[in-house]
Length: 497
Image (cartoon, rainbow, N blue to C red; front, top):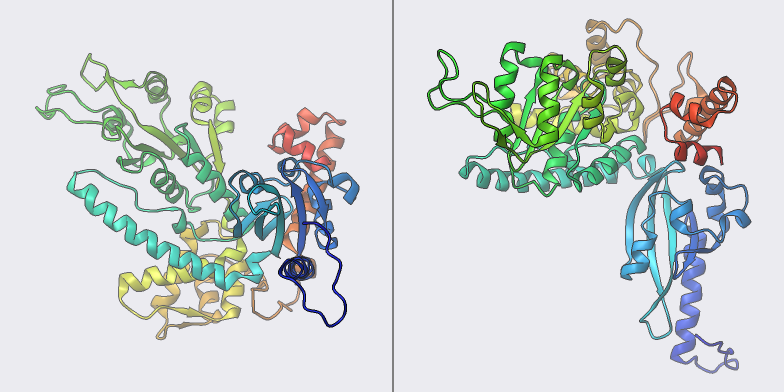
């Protein structure tokens, strides 16, 4: 838009001048009220940022504005969707962005030329940082609404699949409640995995929600209309596992069904096969599983015919598979076959800010099952729950809530009742209560005030210490450092910058 001199005092402005003034006013307004703002040109190269955005530069690996400006946006801001805005010309007004700088609520708006046609750039705006505390009530309510909507959709899909005799998934990504950086990241990885057909390996402690994520990946994949078949390897006797997996041919042995019996692989044809507790699989069966995955065909027990199958495999374990490989208890070739898309599901102690939302969700579920009034916990009770280590994770949290509800004569659950349940469960020393959003500061003896700093700062400091120690131990060998810390070399170089 060409420059327009202001009219003499007292004369009305023309429409073009009004639009120019409005555009400048809105730009300055956004810049002043946002947490940060930057501009990119039509190629995605960063050309400008305001003072507010400069505070994010150290976390992104830059010490000055001059180092940051001039880079392509997708090279310096992990997980950004700015290129998509430039390509489609469509704005993204409210979105969650998570990377090693933190979690942010952002807007992305395309900029067009004077005719309003061609996209000449885009503006990125950070509306809120640390939304897990700022917008926790809103995010929790949104997650519950999403879960209700997905439940309704799943019920309709279930009715259709039941009519066709197929088994289906029970959960979607909305069922994985949480807005902490750890929860957002694992859902992001799982959504990406859902868009592929490669094997997925879910790693994590017991009770973290691995099976729920397996259901969600299937429900969001191209195989969602197909069956979802799961088998818990640890729950099936070793002598029956082969028949459970591959099926039994008619009359294969005395007492066998004359019609034969289909195994899990064949039942999952066209859909997803979920192998839970894969680390407990006997070594004899590991060989046959590897062959089935490589060849895409199975041989039923007592048969000499090979049957083709088409099933996407998702495996899960709470054991250290890499350690089992080193000990010779798990085949290395099978491990690499399954470990194509590994996803670590974080324990509850790494996503403490999700506990209030999880308590609300679990309370709703208990209410639906019992028909009684939903339990309500005070801020001090929530703070105590948020401070525990939760070795059993979400499964343990549910158990504690159910016990507290059963012992209470009211739907109001007090911190004393939570303490009693935890002590009866063997928790000898209760962790001091943490601060929860909207709650009082934990001012107890032994309280660590340093823990009240922003989580991103604490994580960055811990990462820096770990990398420094690993660099010293390996004498600066970056390959060895990355292997020692369990991260890729690209991630290590990003942290070092």
